Every structure is written in C-alpha cells, then in structure tokens.
Length: 137
Image (cartoon, rainbow, N blue to C red; front, side, top):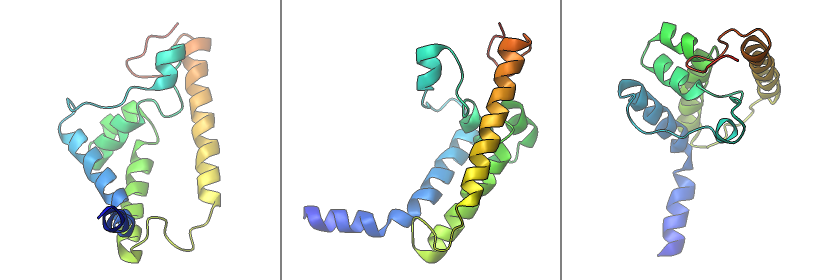
C-alpha cells in the first residue's frame, strides 16, 4: 500500500507547479487566506529578498499588475515563470523540464539580490519606503 502511494505521488509530481500556481491565483482572489510569514524578517526585522513576492505574484496571476508591482517588481516575472513551468511540466510529464538552461536561474538570482540591496538602501540608508507596508528607519 505504502509503495503504491509513493509511486503515485512520484508519477504525479509534474502537477506540483500547476498546483502551486493555482494556490497563488486563489490567494490573489482571496487575500485573507493565510500565508507563511518571512522567517528572516521575524528573526532580524529585515525583509528578505523575496518579502512581499507571494502577494505580488498572486496579484499578477489575477491580472492586477499595478498592485503586483507595488508589492515586488519581480511579481509579474514570477507569475509568468510559474505559468511557463506549469505548462512545460504538464506537457513533458516531468517536474523539472528537460533541456532547461541554468543561466536564467543565476541571472534571476543576481537581479533579485541587486533589487533587494536597492530596497534595503532606500529603507535603511535613505529613510524612504523601499518595502511596502514596512516602516522606514
């Protein structure tokens, strides 16, 4: 019994990106649904590079681009990436699509870190509001 359940889960793993995308779309329609708090922000008081990205992605998935960009500049990019990943995973029936180049992930990571440093500098260095709903110092 246990092996057959595990086997089914392994064979259905390609549906995880679509399930994640659907859950974020639902969160965009119903923002009061519970979410996960940022552990770095809870421990240090400093928002992490992906703080507010869930809200931004959810807003982009329901078509609210101004709200998405208000929360995080990478929201529309994350939404488009999730949609593309979902389609590729379903078409190929694989969680990680074949022939996926590694350089976009590295480039996105560097861009995300640069954006985070800019937001930190705006918030803590300049005293401006670099993070929505987060008090500047």
